Length: 202
Image (tube, rainbow, N blue to C red; front, side, top):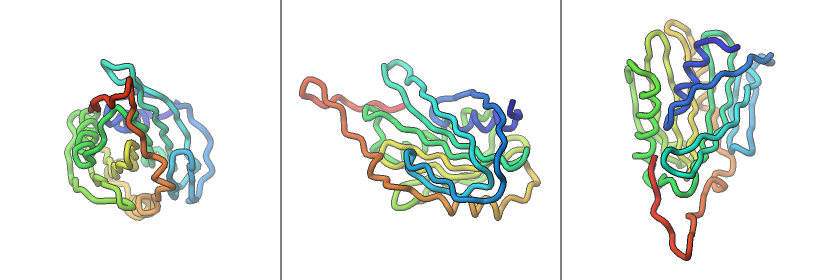
């Protein structure tokens, strides 16, 4: 089974709804290489071939669910690189990117009680709104970006222990992230009985 360190970061990856998961360890080929997921709409440089987790979670008090894919590259026991892609249904209001990103960041913090926000700022990635952050939780740092592309939320971040020299690797990782055909993330509002229902927020 993976380390408690990896289990902790998976809790943080569930930024909107807290999620606890466990992954089996797998042998990875080391060495930075470009990884592309056409289906999830991104490419990025990673130090190892990532493990892939695909799941759905239900939205409370509704009949809706959110599908997500999480990719984890773990080159050592003290550093993990994560890309988590959340695909929200059309009924979820993602029309205010800055508000949605703040909500997502708040959800991440709620999964990490006692966390300290070292830095946080709005930015953009390929023309889409993003929130860049650095969070410390005990002896562990979470550093990365939340990127909202229509109704798809990309969580791109690294998790590392205090004292590890990961600046160059983090920069290589985060700067290599590219969106692929982002227009495919557009979702049409659902229509029932000729009327468009009000959107909900989570």
